[in-house]
Image 1 (cartoon, rainbow, N blue to C red):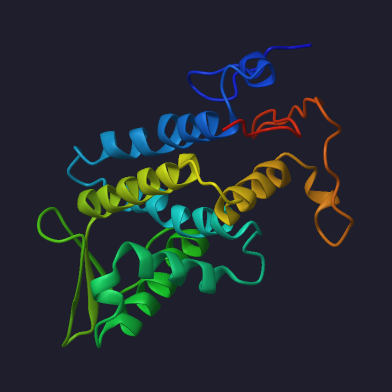
Image 2 (image 1 turned 30 degrees about the vertical axis):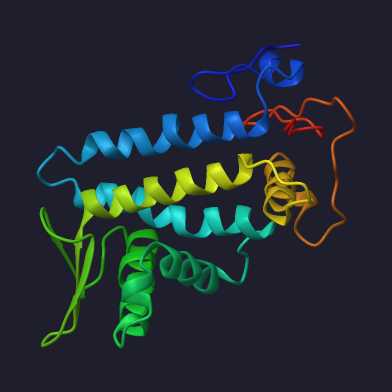
Length: 217
């Protein structure tokens, strides 16, 4: 069987043998394939939009792993849940609802559906990660600081996943569920019964091979 690269540092044989576990590979995938490249981009003067393409994708998929379910038909809910965790002070302020709405509709939907942000988003290279202004109503973003918030949140999530708890941990169970679901044929998860790989089976797809026994704590 082919020994695929499942992340920048790890091979499928290492995952199968148990030398590394799914959390190790997951961390290396997200950091080595995504976040580290985004961080390099922040050094470029006009990189804000490209960096935020990466940042906005984080909101929904990390919430999917936290909940153990995909965000289908719940994109806005998942996005805003991550916003509340990343920016708790702003989210709990009087302008929190406005900020979340602008980030979702003008940033996330603008970037994903139209290729650029919409009119209420402004970029700067210094200051806080995010600020909301009036007259006109705008959200001002420092992409570098915004990305740093995401990196911190991801590190905290990994720490929670690796924490040794006496009782079964729902966060870990949800992670395992999404890790397995990610390796399935999409046609098997859209309205069809869930298909789980047989014990020890390697599922080879572009997202990375996984196996049904995935987390050894």
